[in-house]
Image (tube, rainbow, N blue to C red):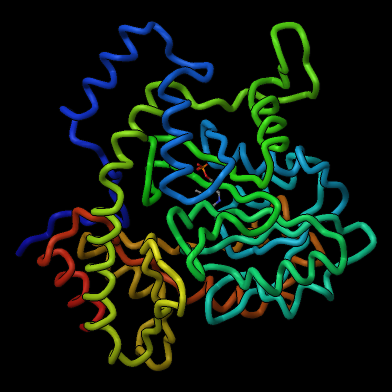
Length: 369
Ligand SMILES: *Cc1c(COP(=O)(O)O)cnc(C)c1O
C-alpha cells in the first residue's frame, strides 16, 4: 500500500532554472536589500496582479499588522476574532493594545457583524477582522459599523491573496489590509508579506515605518522597525507570481474532488464557494459532527495521522484560549460559542498543487471509511 506522507501544504517553489537568472542579476548589482530593483519590481507587479494601488512589501506577514496599527495611531481596544492564527492578536498586543474577542459566523468562520456593536466601548478605536481561509468577511456591514462609530478597519488578509469580491480586490476594503507570503501560504516569497493602503501619503508613512522611521539619511520621523523585504526574496516572489495562477487552478481541482466525494458523508460539513467571489482555495476545512459521523474530530485526525495524512486543526485552540489572552473577559467560552464549536470540530485537509489523484483518493477514503 502506498503510504507516502501527505502534508497539509507544500511550498510553491518556482523552477530553479527560472530563479537563477534573477540571482545572477542581484549578484551583478551587488544590491541585496534596502528597496533595490527586485523590491521595486515586485511591488509594481503585485499591485497589477492584485488590482490595488498602494502596496508595501514586508519581511513577513506579522510586521505589516503591527505597523498598520502603529500607522493609524490605534489606541485602547481593538475588536478582533479568536478564530485565526495567533499573530492577529499578537499584533494588537505588541502595540500595547487590548484585543477584544467577538464570536464568528458559522457560515464563514469570520467575525460576526451582528456581534460587533455589543463589544464597542469608549476605548474601542479599531476592528481587526480576518478573511479566514480566504473567505471574505461581510465587508459592507463592517464598514457601515466602523463609519458609524468612527473606527478604523484593518483586515488581516493573510489567507486572501488574489481573492476578489464583486469584481474588485478584497484588499480594497478597510483602511489597511495585510498579506502573508509565508511558505505555507498560497503565494509565497519564503517568508514575506505586504500591506495595502488607500493613499500615496499613507504608503509613504508605511515605507518609513518599515525602515526604522527614516525619511532620509538624517531624519527619523517615528520609532519604526526593520521589516523590509530583501532582494533575494523579492526575486523569488517575481518568479512565483508567474506560477501562482496555475497553482490556484490545481488547488481548485482538488477542492472540487473533495466536495464531490464528501458531500454525502453524514456528519462532515464544509464551506461552499460564495456568490460573486473569486476564491483562492487556500484551505479546505471540514467540520466533524461526531454524533452523526460516529467518530470525534480528534479520532479522525488521529486516524489520518496513522495513515500518514497530516491534516491540521486550523484554528484549534482558539487564540482566546492561549495563556496571554485566556483571562480576558471577552475570551470566555460563553462569549464565543460558535468559534469554540468550529475550533473543536475542524480539520484542514491537505491542499496544495502537488497533490495527485492517488493522494486525494487516499485522503477521501480515510474520511469515507
Ligand atoms: C500566516 C498568518 C499570519 C502571519 O504571517 P507570517 O508571514 O507567518 O508572519 C497572520 N495572520 C494569519 C491569519 C495568518 O494565517
